[in-house]
Image (cartoon, rainbow, N blue to C red):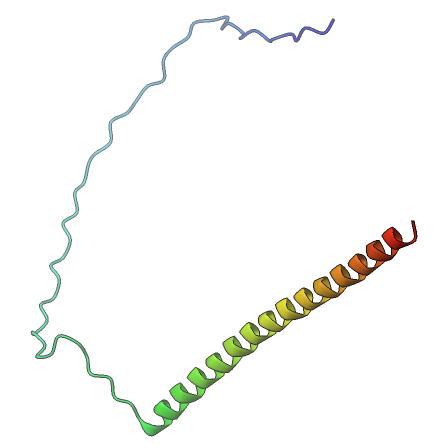
Length: 104
């Protein structure tokens, strides 16, 4: 009752012919030659900074430093608050346990 019944593969009931394979023609394409560029005198392009671009870069750098600093300071503050609250809880528990031992 609980054994799975595995279906059997049906056997073909007629003349079975293998599929025919028709050969296709192979066409090779030769790529066009790349255009030759004249050699450049400098190996790297020179970047020209305008005063507006320099101000934008300084502003973006300042914004990144302020955001990262704010995140790091807030994480440090959260850790300090958590440590202080754990210390206060430990002192309260120590006081309660100490009073319990004195009353016995």
